[in-house]
Image (cartoon, rainbow, N blue to C red; front, side, top):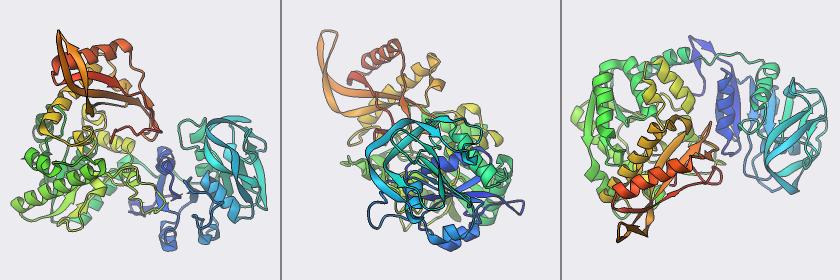
Length: 521
């Protein structure tokens, strides 16, 4: 869906060219928060794709490469020839400068973290923001000499050229990252580009989007039947509601109980969807199948792919039983695609694959329907509200597609799963009781692949170790470990060790993202 239309009206689009930054999706997300559609395409995309998109402006993302090296990504010449506004960010600024006659060097002093930006010349990009801005830097290279026809507009103590603009063309470049929440007035800087420079209209409206997606689903599916793998999470729940609104009884939901769900979750999902939402839901008890396929596997990427493939096998089997099923629906969302390097960009670094996008076998027998594939999590939740899904379901903490399979470090067994389910249940239950659940963005327990000596009563216990993880985040691209009260953590630890005899020790993860990821695998 590279070109969106609402009621046959083309909507304004800001294109983000991806040079491989893990923050690229944040740029698009921020733009959409201002009700303007944004799409991400790789830097080396075919010219016809961009021409068809007809963007109002183009943003060049950051990236891991250095323009001081040979054969690193560059902005295609046709991008400049389009004559539309351009904003380069970090690596996007550096390659823009180099290509337009400037000079980039590897800095003696690299900048990672907060820096004070001094605006030295009036520019629409910094309109109404003052002369000092606290920004977030993440770069090893910097522009040493301005390109011809460019003016300096901002600097920092270590970057003499931290922002620049063309003297006559709508081309701007900044060394810092306005898309991350750490940059003061970052949204306003992007808005200045979107509205004052690109003159974009606010066409990205959720109610229009729902109507559009319903029409797209009808056009794709027509008279065929659709099978949806229902997990009970936000993404699959919204996908189910959207499909149900579009095609009604032609949708069959299959809830796969893979044995890797949270305690009591299987019964809760069936009650919510079958009884409360009146969806056609079939439960597939497949725990033994998953455990058999996962036997002796301890590599996290392999576990994810095996779980993804097994899901598809189960869906294929259910489709055969149901007859005349032609489509498989999935709740894939944009962060899944980006983080799995599924955005078509060769430069994006793979952090981890997601079962929705990384585990699909080529020989899969069903065509895919992915109606929320280009939406971010906050947009999915907004859609869920419009579709009438309960607040309790929409505000649940994220749960990975592979479930507890990636929270059991090492090989997965039935016994380990039961231990983790109990520990996780205690943690979440206590968070809710203490009114802390909604104050953290994600919380869960992890079963570690080590044992530890403990003493319970007068007996020595050599048993498992549980790690607790809780984070606070706005966008899940960066996150801070949650500073939960010591008394609370002590109480949770005591409950876990006293109530689960297979556990002797509880630890708390105080790693932030980056450098750690939120999940352990």
